[in-house]
Image (cartoon, rainbow, N blue to C red; front, side, top):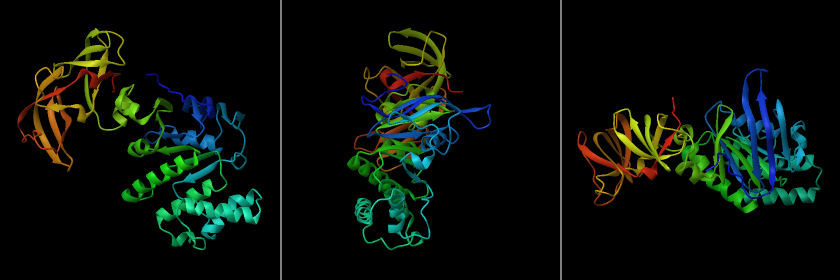
Amino acid sequence: MALSEKIDSESLVRFDHIDKSFDGETLVIKNLNLDIAEGEFLTLLGPSGSGKTTTLMMLAGFETPTHGNIFFNTQDISHIPPHKRNIGMVFQDYSLFPHMTVKENLAFPLKVRKLSNAEIEKKVRHALEMVELRGFEGIMPAQLSGGQQQRVALARALVFEPQLVLMDEPLGALDKNLREQMQYEIKHIHENLNVTVVYVTHDQSEAMTMSNRIAVFHDGVIRQLSTPNILYEQPQNAFVAQFIGENNRLSGKVTAIEEDRCEVQVTGGERIKALKVSVDQVGDRVTVSLRPERVTVDPAEGSVDNIFKGQVKELIYLGDHVRTRVSVCGNDEFVVKIPNAQGNLIADKGQQINLGWSSMDCRALDPLD
């Protein structure tokens, strides 16, 4: 699987060899090349300081690339001011005009574009229907809940029907339940309008829920760009494996290679069979990555090619599964998710159990120091 997977479509947006430095010395974005297809929902995901927000701000026009060019509809917009880019923008803090009603907030970008009053009325009405806020026209922003304010901000970004909408952590100020509800609403609005969305978040669950593709940023570089399922199931490096979802890590050294598999001797001395991903030769230091739900407790003989004894350290009941922390292969923080289903073995703390997994489900990746 290549680091970057392009969608088979003409690019609406292209970042071409973009570097960005704020002090003239340190690059916060390093040789960024990224194509965004028309109609897709692309999320820029990564920890704080990884470069995702800087990338979005360059596309919006609030920051200028140090080197390289940004194209929108084949036009170089690298030095075009934000108000001339015809791009919708939604911020975390809503950025509504506090002295204007909901209707006036939505009408503002249309008046700037000199639309007729009749057209403004029509578009505002349609935008309010889209976010289910009909009847709120005369309300001031301060009278709205956080979720309602975010809906107004979303409607204002969409009301002038831009080809591209940028969203900078738009749900960060909302509580968990409302945040999850808004994720689905934004996803459905995107599907209905077929507008292109570039979304920034540090929340990997949010990115997985909403996106067609996710660009995982780390230290100013996209470490992997792909669909949510590929990022989770087939991470190409240890950072992505660790950042996307829960992950067991075992450090070791490659002792044998055979076709697409390798054998890794881990810290505890055990030898694990794994899928060869970021391995060049015998002797390489690697990180073996394994998802907790891919581990079987008390596997049938011959059903998997990795079986080891472990000791149960902790059991946490989480309804649909029991999160079980086990000491195995020299790792005291190894996690197994045991589904809460009839007949499943639920061990006791301190008990010795057999754990097994397929070499197809564990990946030998670069060492994560």
